[in-house]
Image 1: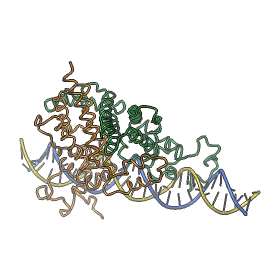
Image 2 (image 1 turned 60 degrees about the vertical axis):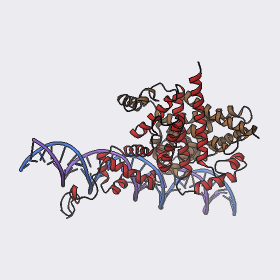
Image 3 (image 1 turned 90 degrees about the vertical axis):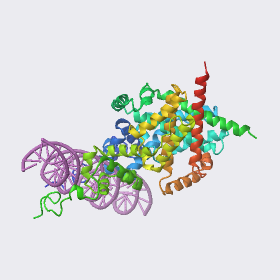
Image 4 (image 1 turned 45 degrees about the horizontal axis):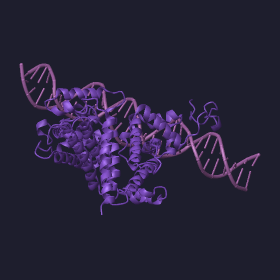
Length: 236
Length: 236
DNA sequence: TCGAGCACTGGATCAATGATCCGGTCACCA
DNA sequence: TGGTGACCGGATCATTGATCCAGTGCTCGA
């Protein structure tokens, strides 16, 4: 004797309230992406489910598929969305080196603020936010007189370095899960005969300061880019 | 009237042949990992399934769980396994710079030979193969006179740089799938007003030579490490 | 004013997958 | 020869991404 359709049809009481009377704004791709980022921030990449995401949005899971083609779309959109927070220096407002440093540091900060993003870096990033920042990077380097093949090498090198650094740090800084790091430390201590240098000088031994390490490496790269640039400009 | 158990029990004909008479060697963690690598190489990370892996091994999928705790175990083991192919230079046989270059280049070659590996770099790598190579890296740097904080920065910088480079290249060199790259190129051409520098100097415009770009960046890093090392050794 | 069309929604459902339960089978040893 | 433990796999469960299709309400033109 159950109603054939228990959901949208039938009883007034069960019917969805009129659009205007609803508390939440209508669903939109933008709202989906915002909520996805929030969900990822709170629970990590592993727990992002279309169902869970829909629940947080107060809709059915299938509704999402009207606004978005696949789950990967959500991930791509979320990934690009967070880069909006990276401030783009005003072109020419400063030394090329200062500009690049600012951009790369901001890039890194965002990646670390959203640790789930590191795991998603293995997909083409072609969103508007990413492209705008790449544009600035290339423009700054070109403006500084860097030419091929150093230009591509510089842009790639910088990007790859940030990505690798963030990925590595995010891997070992899993939120408040210090257990694996501790276990790894102990493992190295127990096998100090096999890995003597790692056990004493390894990354897990000291209080490895990610920030200074990153800064040093970045400086090395910038030095190299700068020296090549000068050579190019001055050389006959 | 169907037999209650159609599988292991019952008819002699359906019974699994005695261990010795079987063609395949008995299942082992090692054999599983080897087959997993083969499967990953052939079909990519997305198509690695416990069922499919078991099928290739001629066993039931559940059998795998006796040798391995979870699917992630398989991935971790496969990831470490491929690094066995990275040759470790004989310590002290050459210039520290040559040794490091050899190791890092081998590292990169392996990552590119197994593109699926790039996507797995976001997990702690504590396998014996990885550790042995890290040991060499640290030992070589220490032997060259690099001290903290430059030591950690150097090791991290080099690792992060390879990882980032391989990840990026693997992302854009998806096997014979040139479609997305082509599409991206066209997209940039169509939006050359918004991304003027990218459209003309961007990484997708030229025949971006991954190898030379990588070599240049690596040289920059090594220059930086070397200069700091000399300064440390010579300075009072 | 009204009705048609379109933007949007979601319950039911499917197939694929990771993982577990539990009842087997086989080699080996005392 | 009897038993013990290493090893195997069919049935099964819960979860998840994705699709089908029957709706529902807003809007706009006649």
